[in-house]
Image 1: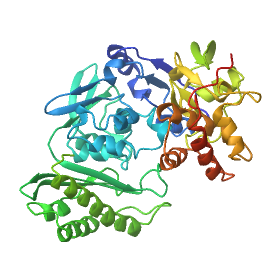
Image 2 (image 1 turned 180 degrees about the horizontal axis):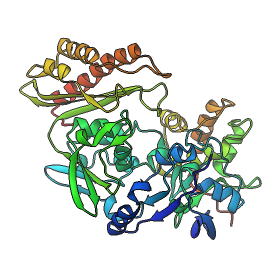
Image 3 (image 1 turned 120 degrees about the vertical axis):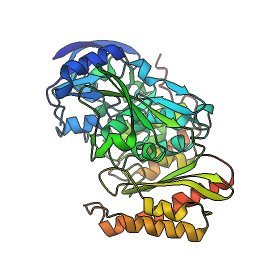
Image 4 (image 1 turned 180 degrees about the vertical axis):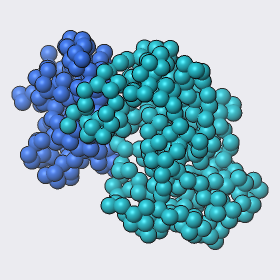
Length: 292
Length: 163
């Protein structure tokens, strides 16, 4: 099908984007890469009467690399992040370029953006999971000003966020914690949406886990942390027994949905398998003394 | 809401009046009458509408006309001709990498975009990339072999100079 009738408005700078959203916010959707929104428009599952295209707002495509954090402009494409693997800005955050290669396919990654993915709020989306795992913050702009919101508070449910109608997500900031991190997922075919994804992070210290984090995607309406599994890890070395105990705790802690793609029981088994893999990967990276 | 946009398609600038909510593939086919780019699923799954936008493979059904304004588009019409096929087209023919041909323009542009960035991808990388497009005649082995074969040719990632 084709997109429904709508007014297509282009912002040329941040001020114009914010003005357009102040005027049309309630009936508008922001479009960046369009790789999630255009399918919804073509199927008429989304019927905004106004589209605000921010693709030409170049200040929102910048990358700011600081000592303590990495800020990625909302318009940064998945492909740009994937290809930045090994470069200085992503030192300590190598999990970002590594994970970008799991998103969709090359022609999707060339257009889709990290800001669009976060604002879309798919609970199985790789960026949503990593943003929760790594305590990332979104920058939201409106005529009322700018605010920073942790992704844990931004993501409210299936495709539901706390972004106000007159706000636009302009950047996401990942702190440089020095944690080793990994995201693994299972999809029936490479490039498909993941049935389940598991991400883990830990700060290596004297051979034991400090600040362990486990976040799961595809098991509920948002990416979820599993404190029960994190508690198993705290202060212990990532031995196979400890990893297995944490994976079992994670599987026991979730009640994933059943749908046409997989049963709840299948998803729970995937949780155990994927948490094991993610933690094993984190343990390996930590032993090598490599962050993220 | 019709507006004026400028598209460069295979090196030729076109100024057209379109409804900005139309998709790029509809602009190419219905406005510019360049029907080499096929349209299949219209939700970014099948890949038959794959074109290059500013040199990178992209789904023409997932780009709105307004988003394409001012950008460089490359389509299968720019690759080669029946008389002077592009190395990828010649390789697809040699390796029987098509049967019904519906998916072929998308695979050719996907491959052209890949080879432009990565002139000598290994077979695993080619398999990974072509997984983005659907071929229902199951010619994937031929498609992978053809891309691997063409990867050795000069200019495989670029349009033929048709002089």
